[in-house]
Image 1 (tube, rainbow, N blue to C red):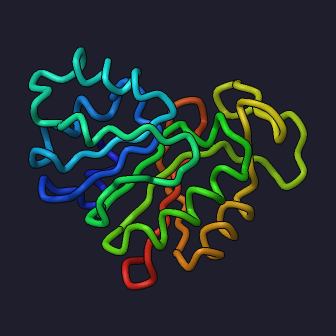
Image 2: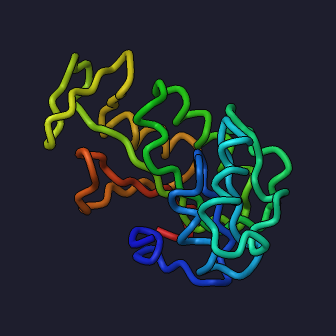
Length: 185
């Protein structure tokens, strides 16, 4: 929530939580946002439904239809009203191509998007196993994955968005990035 607040999230925003799981962010975002303004995607619809039933004080603030099973970052059935998107701890568990796919699909799919926030582990280009600041060892070819800052910046630029690496310290040494439309640097 702090990262979204720093990007200016208001209750009127429409938030897409990519890889939301059992609503670890959703249980905070749903009460903050206007009813129906939170959308979650994950590879497991059952996990999201469980989170809705167990984690939310008022599950009716989150319509079941706002939880969308999506393992391919295709964003099926989501409205084009999304203004903020976040993928926290998602791309650390997936090969680099997943980030490229998500960026490629977010850009044209959500014309009102102000920011896409996501986390990655960073390592120099062509680095093998790399020890992150908190001691976790990341890899280029298996979980937990790392990528280079140049790769991230290039992937964001390639879809016509502006990259920004944020200076905040995140758990396990993850690095927060934002991708913004050119008119919203």
